Image (cartoon, rainbow, N blue to C red; front, top):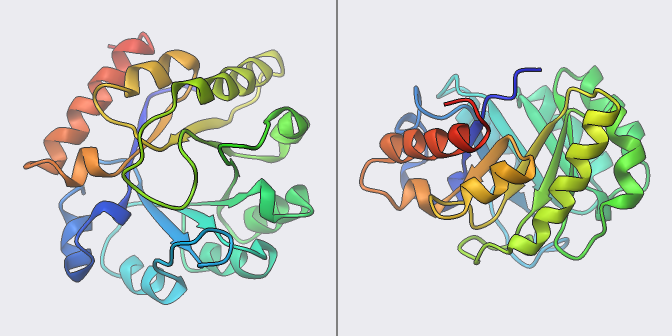
Length: 225
């Protein structure tokens, strides 16, 4: 797989009163729109849910990268795939049978992703990589935007990249948390090829230009520039 960088702005950092407009602002620049679904159970915060995703899907053609920070993803995740999400990622800590859920998501027409939170070791999940399309490594603690990037968590990215290369797997390695112009190169060098950026995009005067700059930085470090 050609590992061109994927930039996925997180709409969690956008103005929710203008959500469709905020997504339109990244069209043509971003690869995915990252949609953080939080349930006030798995994580303390509460954000958007399925009805918002269904409505927003009608307003834009940009692929949705849905990140479920919720309990019982087996119950809820398939509906996001059916709503038209391109990629649906659920947390390892919340799922008893990740392989079964990944198969369900793929059958529903979505890519299947597994998220690993800050305090969770990645090693127990390396054997599951053949069943996944995306592994999302949290570079903060899941649940809140605006936290500082934790470079020590990139060792997990390196572990996943090594295993993927040894087994010649086509899998995206995504990083989420504190990704900005001063951190994206570290993540790319570690082996990430998909990057969630919230404040770095939606806090910029020109979100599309911010995305282009992030992509250029990642591509250069990945040897693609």
